[in-house]
Length: 361
Image 1 (cartoon, one colour):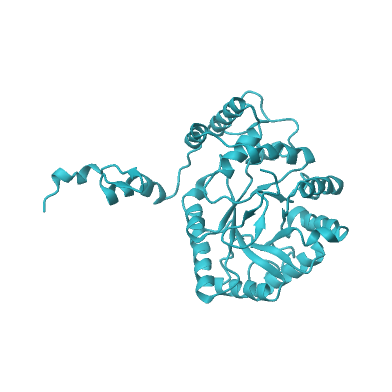
Image 2 (cartoon, rainbow, N blue to C red):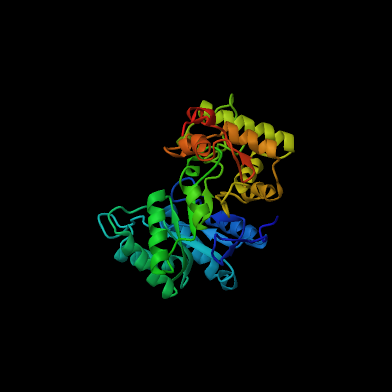
């Protein structure tokens, strides 16, 4: 499956590549990114291979990420309209200004205008709320985004890093009001080392048809194959000083990943990304390459299909502890509902206190 084997983004009509090019590392302002030349080389490679989905945010690399993308597409005007360009709002870039960030009407419009100037474009294809703003009514946020969609300044709306209850509330309100700002995509941290979204957010996405777009699919490099239990931090990792070493529990997953990669004759990167691509609800996975080689290393995952037993192994070693009542529902509810009956091809267990032989009418 190449990058130009496009997929629908949730229930929307938007078609995107199975890997989204994340531009968080574009620009060296934060000390861990890549140069303008490296950024453009990555963009060239991704687009030439058929990729069409590029993601950034207003504050990445102190706004340099958006500016790099703006300069790149301004010099290649024939490519801008062929790309699905996403950015995000919420982060405040104006010290001391309470209206400089967040999700109020004033803040959203101001942030969008600034992003459009940096990106040198008239519109954004996908505009994400980057985090929940508890001090702004959701109705105000949705109405503002709806107005911007209808004005042609943004095409679609997504949410990122928002709680499930808030996301469900926003989706329901937008749908009830017939607003064009109903979120079509949820950008969330998701990997073999971070699976807790499976408790509430993934089921919400599946129920509503919102696409799940995982970020940090390699957990900041922990799943890249660079980390070995007895070798400490990788010397070539710019983030290693900030992240430290994986924990013992994380190494259990890392070791299992390496074993399966060896069995399959491929890399840990490919297996980690292939596992994620086969998860329910996942549409397009965000890559955050700092070099062209990082991008190329990820591409074998597009054609890698893991065997059921390999998936089962990875599922077991990475099994998350979920918030109440997710685990209770998984373990007990089917037994309580079906009492040993077979439903949808699966036979339920029997909850011991409710054995049929002990029930009196």
